[in-house]
Length: 85
Image 1: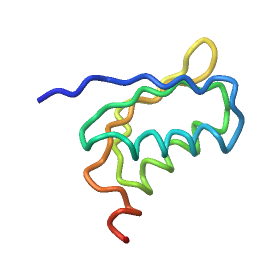
Image 2: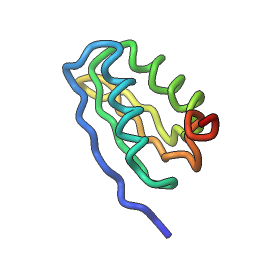
Image 3: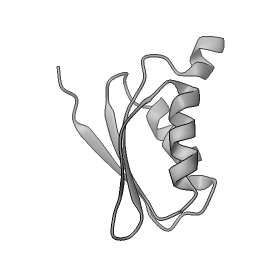
Image 4: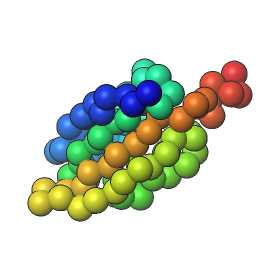
């Protein structure tokens, strides 16, 4: 079953907001849902992949855009914080 891709525009926000907001948005999705995040913060290319690794999400794609960066993320089965709680 294919999930619809949701888009999240975080252009203009500075570190750490893109990673924090991405984490919160992913927490509200179902496992397997896909989130496409647009950012302009140069540190997001470090922070968002790190967030995915720590929380068990799958970074499907990371690509440079004309204005910044786009990340395509599949929500993991269980967030690390859920597994610990």
